[in-house]
Amino acid sequence: MIKKAIRKIIKAFSLLSLILLLITCSHSPNVNNFQDYKQYGGNGLMNLIKLRGKIIAITNYNSTDYFIYRGEKMGYQYDLLNSFANYLGVKLEIIIDNELDKAIKDLNTGIGDLIAMDITITRDRVAQVDFSNPMNQIRQVLVQRKPQNWRKMSTWDEVESHLILNPLELAGKTIYIPSNISFRMRLKNLSDEIGDTISVIEEKGKTMEELIDMVESGQIGYTIADEPVALISQNFYPDIDVGTAVSFSQNTAWAVRKGSNDLLIEINKWLEGFKRSKEAKLTFNKYFKNPRIGRANIEDYHSLTRGRISDYDEFIKVQSNILGWDWRLLASLIFQESGFNQNTSSWAGAFGMMQLMPATAKKFGVDSLSSPEANIVAGVKFLKYLDDQFEDIVTDENERHKFVLASYNVGIAHVYDAMRLAEKYNKDPAVWTNNVDSFMLFKSNPQYYSDSVVYYGYARGSETYNFVNKVLEKFNQYKTINN
Image 1 (cartoon, rainbow, N blue to C red):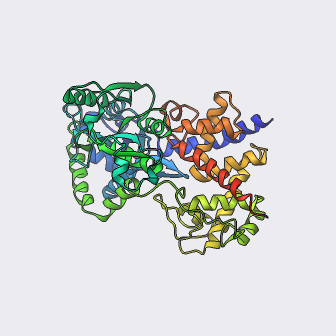
Image 2: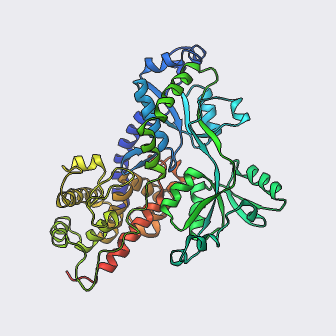
Image 3: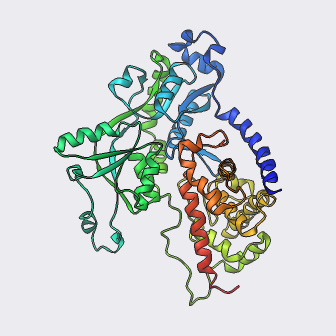
């Protein structure tokens, strides 16, 4: 009965999701539906874009380019594309291609108008596409673990004494890299330069982010990553170091079809003004500079001798009764989100005690100027909404808490994706631990987020997995406080 209910509810949600995706993220009709492709492949492309009222951009799912977080579309490339679409006065349509070769093929057959990724400009690629002016410079860096007790070391020099700081020190080391990526050639050249062997192991099906996770967990010693991806990962994993470069900086740019001169001119005109704007710096800092590790490093407010958790304990107790939760679980969630600090804001724009996203906050009647109590009330209403969505699916109350926490962190759509994956692979979609949580972890793996039962693509599943565990760990600590 439970599985039938799950299938019924998720199927209804899936149909709605599919309709939305067809509107916003599906493959566009080939330009031949408008006129002969060759007529618009060159200087007529801007006319076509204006005619259809939208620009069709190809990008990929990952933690930098494009992703959906708490129900909102985000990503560095996505924000840049929105800025460019606004400059042109047209709408934006996104097409997902996770492999550059496939993206170039779709570009050159007219499925998309441009590729928006951090594409390094190489001789081979210049023969296939035309590039915009450089947008950024990128280099590859070594990802390694800091020493286990690095926080207790007296100086940073002491920490660095345990790290590889010079690529020459990679002689004799083993480095794991994703397959089908240019890192192998760079490491081969580096090996020739230092006159010694660097062992390279290609991990088929693994992404840069997954290999960084493996370094952080101690499964492997080293990997190589593009610096933007490494910087984001360091925000999640402060125990890794990404400061050692293993390559020179290379220019990256957007790509258009050969001969799309009018579109290229517009991109370069927009880029010239954008680079000088405050928006450019804010957008870069949003994704690559601001901490994205939640409240894990905030000193705990709780003191056993005081016998309370926060200054808001009594108010949290009242709101927890409305929600039907143990008040200490709600307090644990608030601690993890904001450390009981109403003035906290996140890289994604979430704010307040409950770290509500702007759209969610508006739906439940609060904004950034609302009081801490009002923010908690709105957050509890949102939690109640999430709980209602799972009530008929996950009948065990304690298990349902985990689904609600996961949905609060990453968005209910990604949790439904993980549930569909769990059911497909014969796991229980109504049980989080060792079932759905495993597939939430897989949501950063293309093999899984490209599956036909997944409608919302990439998610950094490890963040959500860890979020649920941290809230529950804090809850267990808070249980020493009497009701």
